[in-house]
Amino acid sequence: MQQKRDSVIDLKFAVQVLSIVWAQIQPGIVKNCFRKAGFRVDSDCTDCLPQEDQPDPGVWSAVEEVFGSQQFSDYVTADDDLVSSEQLTDEEIVAQIRQVPNAEQEEEQNEEGNSGIVTEEVTTSQALDYIQGLKNYFEQQATTSDEMNTLVMMETHIVSKAVRHTVQAKLTSFFQNI
Image 1 (cartoon, rainbow, N blue to C red):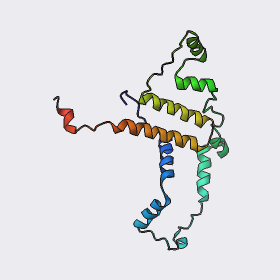
Image 2: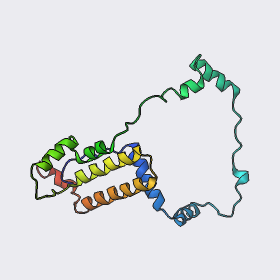
Image 3: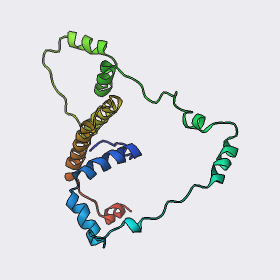
Image 4: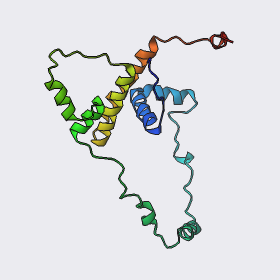
């Protein structure tokens, strides 16, 4: 992690990581936590549940006043026609991942006579960018969460491997130059 990388944690990333971590927790751990907190396994909680409140009929009339002539269904479906994602072709996705402007330029480079293929070293930052691109791809394909879980675990492994060799500085080291 020698290069500067934006470390923005958005809600989507947090939910993905939370999903992976929650899947790794064994049921016995949750059960023990509740037991240590004082919850009894054999207690009958049916009479402990609060009674549901009856809806206040005046609330709906207040909502209708605020929205005026607009129907609730119009409010709920107002953004249904908005474009929220773009359908990319496989070539466009690969080009984004490889950061190649287009496939034609790649073919031209191959035709120029690159007989010896030399793979360049991939930095941690680049690897994380590639994984983010794959995560975006799988989100657009609406696949199962297994692929996303695998990518998040790979991302976690890459970050932990990069951080493993770093040393936390002491607070006094920031004031040595003063």
